Length: 389
Image 1: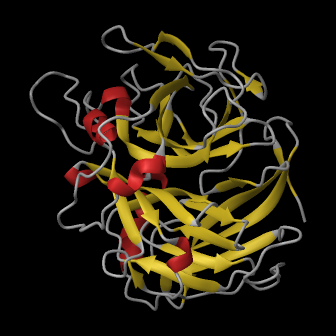
Image 2 (image 1 turned 90 degrees about the vertical axis):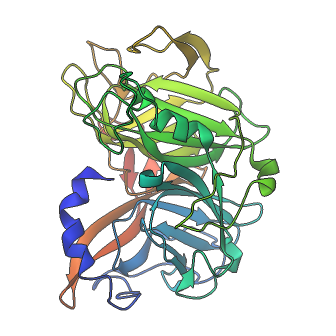
């Protein structure tokens, strides 16, 4: 799905038969700081997530209550302690596991999961405390269930050009309502415009970067109250995907950012600034600033208004970008230039883990490694964070 790394896919196949863990220690010259396997008194400034024979790092979340880090490597979930020691892995995924977030009440990890050939889109629910060894199977070992999102499937398969044919997983079409390419960013947080209260799960669309259409310049975020999701969650047979899930979402919201490439890669609620943070791959449309990082004003209530650019006039619940950061004079769009698309986690006190990922060659195989480094909020431009430690 991710265009900037497609060229590596043929090389990565050669590494898939390599041992499950190729590197579990930090690179030479980098020391991990932590109390391994336990809670922190101070968050470590650096954690290394290993190097794996899979696709690139897509999301990171830290269970601060139990002292673990979860890493989404697209076809594999990795669990480490705060020193980077591997505690367990969940493998055997054939779809695209994207952004992840932990529910610290019970340690479950929620992540976007796509099977676009089957037009099936899920929130994967992984039993964090039950992940206790390497090589656990996503289908057979009882650590993963999935909840299907009908709304996403309907928008993805929408026949927007009216020719009676759905054109499939391609950006080169006017199909896909709002340019929906699936889902990626996920995060728990309060309702938009509220400081506290019930935490709900927000799920952000992927958006095709089709520069010849005008209806794909909003980010789309669905809201779900997951308290009743046990009735929908089912083990997932990837050869025969189920469609058990809520018939309706609890909210659908739009925020105009201009063009992006595959929409919100990482979504995160930040209690410190009350921002909803959205890290994206930069867009390609002329006439837009094509920022890589946006902050939605979480203190502002959604406003009913026109969803601009649609083929037929349409209204929806509109969110507001924070009045901060860079400002494009032509469009009024606010944003930042910052990397966060590999993973991002807010600690709630003005400190944040920002992930990095890269392809490296180890033992004649190309593998993907990941790491997180501690940053602090500065609010400066062009990027609002500075590294710590």
